[in-house]
Image (cartoon, helix red, strand yellow):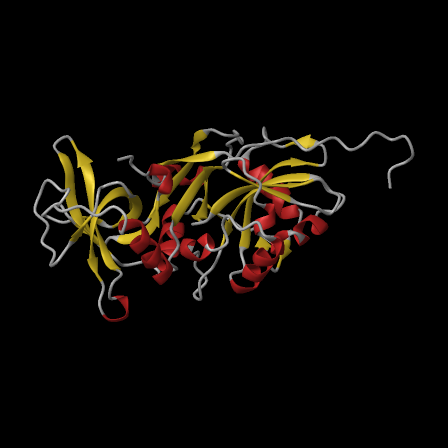
Length: 324
């Protein structure tokens, strides 16, 4: 307990997360100077624990996410007496232990305490901690990555809903093969000597996905079969080119029933008579829509006919909706 008249503890610094640049893994000859971590498919959060038993989570956009994830409140108690600012990612794991962004979406934006508590029981989150920027009155931004990770490991942070997993040093291909085999999104390579640079994309952090991400425009949909009758079984998507919107394929794999119902509502208010694509679409009985909705998908490459190979739905991108 502070003595009478003692000044209040200094406020924690507000630190925006450091960002990675997309790129290939470091060359084999350089990998001894790099650490390799799992690329998590979740929501990035800065975790501020003032040391009084509380914790506050702030998203990359600067929004307070603390009420959404009540199961993480106990982390503040574990850091009581140790003011700290940490970096991590909130994920929801599927039955096979892999991050599932679709499940996480059910937790996002929920601020009502009762509903958040109920969802915490149904879809509990995990907080993956992978960096520390401030500890007990001292900024760690200027320390090399490997020293910051040593400090983080020394805190012994482990709980039912949070952990600070170890990283792999110097073995990029092994990390790549392991994350691919276990169904993770990819690998983040971090230079061992790199400093933490808030709110900047730094070449000291490189992210490499096992699949290619792509934003596509929805120009139509095809009806599902059986229990999906009346709902989008797949959406017909295209990419913008100088000549217009080029059809590149249909995407149905990876959609949850909840997403299909949501898409049906959105697409039902923007129908059109003809195709918005500049090239032919070989799909039976298509339903055309105004090309306003943008989705993020992942795929493994392009076919000889310039269509998507193995496309998988990832999420709708309301922030990129095209105005009519």
